[in-house]
Image (tube, rainbow, N blue to C red; front, side, top):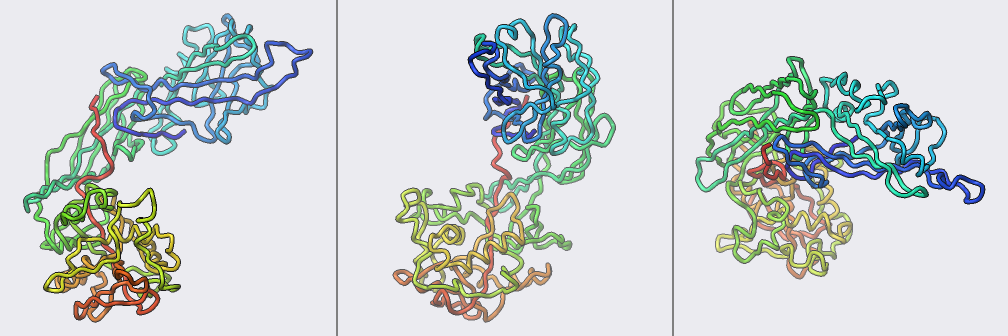
Length: 536
């Protein structure tokens, strides 16, 4: 069983409709009550918050969806006795359908007879389940003896999420189904970790937030592993109802910290435990700061350089074109559209991109008579949503005056219908670097430099190279030519290169003049597409 989370409210809900294998009969000579095959429907009632609110909307927080190979058990009771043909019958999900999977005879729907029976379902299936039909709740003993394991990570979690239900017959004697509303019998404790917060002393720069580094967990003094919900950055444990539990753990924020959460919860209820930590790292963001694989920023002045550096800060501030240049709108701004929180600055990769062992290439090995960056103008879904790539603008000092367009142009390259002819090699280098060096969750993905980014790197190369040398990266090469992803207006042959010896912007045909490819990324103040969480 898979567990999904859509928005942030601590409630579990979802609906799944399951159909068993059907057994069709001919009208003649048969029992009219048994024409329709046995059918069931299952509704997950969801976890109830401790304040009494509940939800059944699948878009609200945790929803449960059964996966291939999951199995449930079904009982039927008449009077105080189990019906032999429906005694712990096993239904397994196969190709998205629930199929009778215990080797026994098919079950036929007998409406008039079934209306005099009580039906029960439970998850997960257990051939040794304790079922006592004479009791008000036949699963009572089974629930009270339920054992929850210490490892609840990944797929292990749902093995301990015991659910039971009483079924109701729907329909008339000729057609119908057995409807179940599954109730979670265990309780749910959810841990919301604090964030590691950088408070920048530069001024006018928002706080920069990262997840803390989570350490160990114990459940009732035993080492344990929770289920991690990535979409909300929360950790959760199933616990036995009406029994006191204690969760202890550690994390590394500004310092190594410990916390404790616990109490007693009723079955089917959920509680969020929010760990508060108001400590912040005061940091002056500056060019040359080390940018790490986990999103942490280490000062350029630090005597200790971390081993997981993936880039260097080369620009401080918001690089979104609609912010830096009044003539560009938010609608046109691909970076702002895809990464609205990437407002802190720009990071240059520690190494050049390589593809098939080579670190230089033409921009496209094929034709040179295609643009890669104007296709959106004639696309009804994307018209007006990018900035054209076919412009070179410089100020009086020869500095590239256009905005930072590397991300905008890279998106156009990757999605270009003329990719094979116009920019295939360039795209290959971009994709190769994205594969080789995973971008942190708090950043944009790596993208190829435009003329603006290249001009910035050229003017900072002595500063950048000094730090690249310290971290063992590849220095920006003097006398080398670097591909931008900007095209020349009215000329389908030309993609601009930047000369890192002279600073000159060169016209180069797409399939001529090998050059280097250097990647950059923009970084953000917030991890995940995290919504506000209602604390229970």
